[in-house]
Length: 101
Image (cartoon, rainbow, N blue to C red; front, side, top):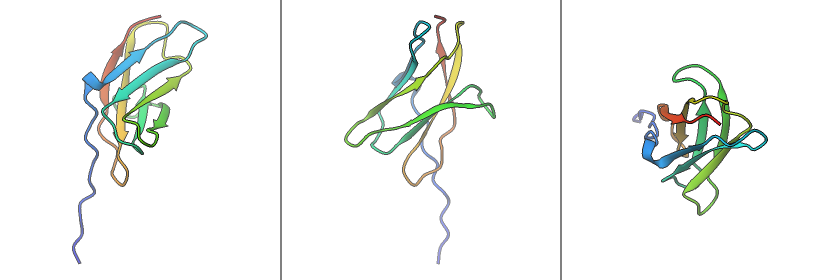
């Protein structure tokens, strides 16, 4: 019997990530494309450790997902995004800048 290394999901390409920091009262959106149904996208507030702000799962027959977050921040900053494929470990975090409201 052979033991297999756990496969880690490939990190999302930064060019496939769009962050919309909407005006107060509207959810902010992190849109990730180039995905597969069942992939889980998580958005964090730090490159390591930190807090998971929100997550979303790609729907059947879709290749993108919108992660809706109540408030990223009034000022410009960064969020950190991961992808987890079905039956794989979470990818490394990819930084993405967002502009202020």
